[in-house]
Image (cartoon, rainbow over all chains, first blue to last red; front, side, top):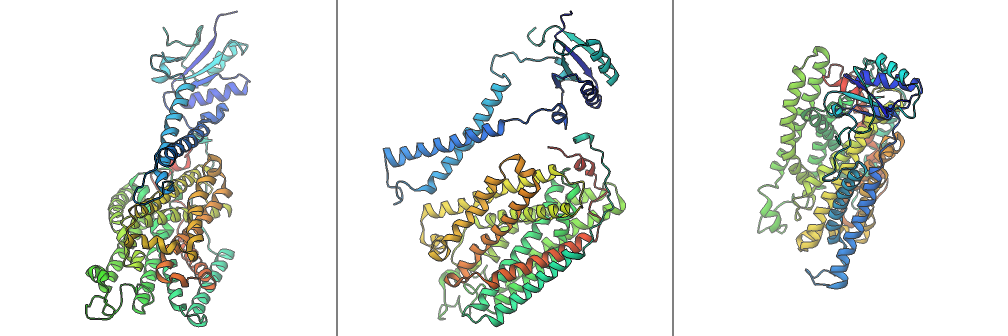
Length: 178
Length: 411
C-alpha cells in the first residue's frame, strides 16, 4: 500500500483535460477536483458541480440590510427623536427608501464577501491551500483521490492516454504550506 | 455544453412571413383603423377627438421608442464589441429598419394634433405669448422661444431623421457584411454606433421633453428625459426578447439558447430597477422640495381618477419583474421570461398612459374601445412591418466576426 493520497494529472491544454475528465468518468473514477489557470466553460456541468448558493446568501443579507435600515431610521426619526423637517410627518416613507436601499446593497455586498471568504478559507495571515502551484500558472490539473479510487495504475494509464504531460503522486494534500 | 457544442445550424435560414402571423397582424391593424374611426366619428362624448389623439400620440411614441430601442441595442453591441449577441442581431436590426416608418407616423400624428389643437394646446394657442391677448400665459410666454410650433416641429423632424439615418446605416453595414465578409463593415459599424450613441444620449431627453413633457407645459423635470429613456429601453428589450422567444417557439433561431435569453433577462431585470430608480428619483425630489409648480404633476396623478393606476404602474414595472426574474432559473425558463416580457410591455403602455393622460384629458380620461383598439392596431402595424423586414434577410449575420463566440456563449 503506497502512501499516495492524491494523483495529480497535469495537462498543457484545456481540451486534453476535458477529454481526460470524460475518460475517467467513463471508467467510474471519481475526480476530486480540477484546477485551471483560467475559467473553462462547461467544466462545472461536466464535473457535476451543484450551483453556488451564494445568491441565496446575498438575498438573505440584502433583506437583513433592508430591515436594519428601516428599523434604524424608524428608531431615530419616529421613536427616539421626531423632528419637523419641511413640515413632513415624522414617519414619512419616501425618505426611508434611499437609506433602506443603500443598506440593502451594503449588507448584501459585505455579506457575500464574508461568505465567499469563509467558504474558501481566505483570511488575512492564512496560507492559501493549494494542491498544485502550477495550476495557477500554465497547467490544467486534475486531482484524483487515491485512497477512494482503486487501481492507481489504471488511473495513470487513462491520464496518459488523454494526453497528460506529467503525473504526480502526492503524499500530502496541499503543497503550499511548505 | 459550452465549448463542446458542435451542433450544426442552418445559417441560410430565412423567416417566412405568412400564415397566422400575417393574418393576425393584418386583423390587428384593421381593428386599429376601426378604433380610430370610432374615436373620431362614432364616439359622441365631448372629448372624443382629444382622447383619440392622446391615444394616437401614446402609441405612436411607444412604437417609435421600441424601434429606436432596436437601433440603440445594435449600437450598444457594436460599441461594446459584444460577442454574445451576434447571433440574435437580426431582430433588433428588423426593429431599426422600421424606425423611419415609425418616425414618419409619429410626426404625422404630432402635426395633426398640434394644428387641430387636440395635442399640446397648453402651449400652442393663439396669443398665448401676447400680453394683451385673453389667452396670455406668462409661464409659457417665457418658454416660447424654445417651445413654439416651428422650432418644435423642426426638432422633431431633425431628431427623428438623425435616429432613422443611423438606424438604417447600421443595418446596411450588416447586410453588406453578409455579402462581402471581412472586418471593414464591422469597424464602420463601431464608428457609426459610437456617433449615434453620443447623439442619441444628448438628444433623446430633449425629444421626450418635447413629445411628452410639453403636454403639461407649465411643469418641468430634468429627470424626465432619463425616465423616458429607461421606459424606452426596458420596453425595447422586452419586445426584442419576446420576438426571439416567439421565433424560437416556431422553430427558428436554433443557435439562440437559454444562455442568450438569460442575458436578455438580466438586461430586463436590471433596467426595470433602473426605471424605478429614475422614477423614484424624480418623485422623491419633488415630494421633498414640495414646490407647488412641481408637485402639481403628482397631485393630478394622486387624485381618485388616477391613484389606482399610479400604484399599479409601480407594481407592474418594478415589483413584478424584480420578484419574478430574480432567480437564475426564472430568466432561463422561456415561459416565465415570456410572461414578464408581455407584462412589462403592457406595464410601459400604462407608464406612458400615466405620462400623457393626466396632462391632456385630465379627469375625462377613459379606458375603452379607443385605448384598446388603437393599442392593438399599433401592435399589428409594428408586427407586420418588423416581420416583413425580418423576412427579407437570413436570420443570422453570417459573417459577423464574433458569431462563433455567440454560438458558444455560456453563462
